[in-house]
Image 1 (cartoon, rainbow, N blue to C red):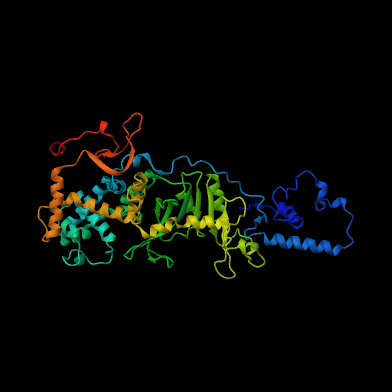
Image 2: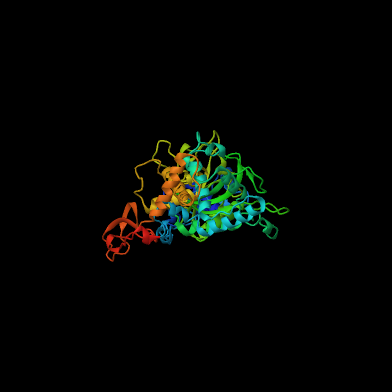
Length: 527
């Protein structure tokens, strides 16, 4: 990326531009090479006076015209070559990308990876607030416990797996069109009561928090987003963008974005790992307060907050965020920036907006007569790819990284992040199946329902649903086994030399253990 120049420097640059070939290497264009007599344009005092005064005036006019073309709106002057750039030296990120040691030590099966995000602390808070609101609003309310709340969430997950997003609950519980797992978990009436009473805070305490627009959900949001960064370390490439969570209810900060699939919803700033699309940091945009002026440089503020604490990474973002000022600030934290930039930015000189008379491979045409401007502090030279379309390497890198947040628009963030953690720990799990993420979500939903099934006192009317309840109760009566069997194999974590690779883990702590370090107990002693 070229840097700004002052007025005195640009005269020297433009004189070199007129007398030298811009396509040559930086070493060939170096005026300090030592042989000053070779370049007569820099030593006018040794030349004979020119008889043609008009030619000198014309050259001077051309120089001023070219200087004006490289001068931006804010008065900054750019270099027409890439020989002078903001120096970015890639540094170590300081951590190993992927799941953290804290996460790996607590993952033993698909459900355990998901429960790292939906923790007991979060569930107990939601249960307490839901019971509080249920007692206030529903006359026949019966308090629910954590297992029943987990079963309720599991049913919501399975409804998504079965593509029942807009299906009425009466259809889900129907003996003809529904599925047995819904009838086995709870009655339709109980499901409706929980949906009506579901709350994440005490409504009567909101007046004391009226300045916070996210007050009804703030406590749960903070507990949940804290887990995102604690469980995973991003790779070198990071994507910062906006995500629109679909929502058409009453909300003072609901956004309308016509280019998004849902169009209406809550806007969330997201920083995602490009390699896995893991949502590493999220921030809800609640809009500006009444009477406050519009925020200036909002995109810059968002990127700096999303990348706080990082170094050695490369951030990719679109033209809403990208600016020269942002690139300079990120370089101070040893972070590179790659992103498209709007043509109406005050730091863009007029010459970069032109498309006529340029080689076709130097401009990416999105529409006829228009070009796409890309700013990068990562790339050193204006290289072009070897592909048939001859795209600039900067464009290829931008397209490769841009899909990080776009993938989140299609999935549930907690389930997707948990899937990334689980497949990183057990890479062999259903590796040959193309729909392994669907299998993961389905297994998590069914496993969350089983503890509540074993507690049901009344059997459902459907024979199939009643069979599911009996099977869950029989499995609970048998008790848990001392060792959990996984499909993947890893070294025994208790062996000193760690030469053995085993597929068994402790059901309590999740450590991989061999037979020498395992202890088997009967079902009677396990209860």
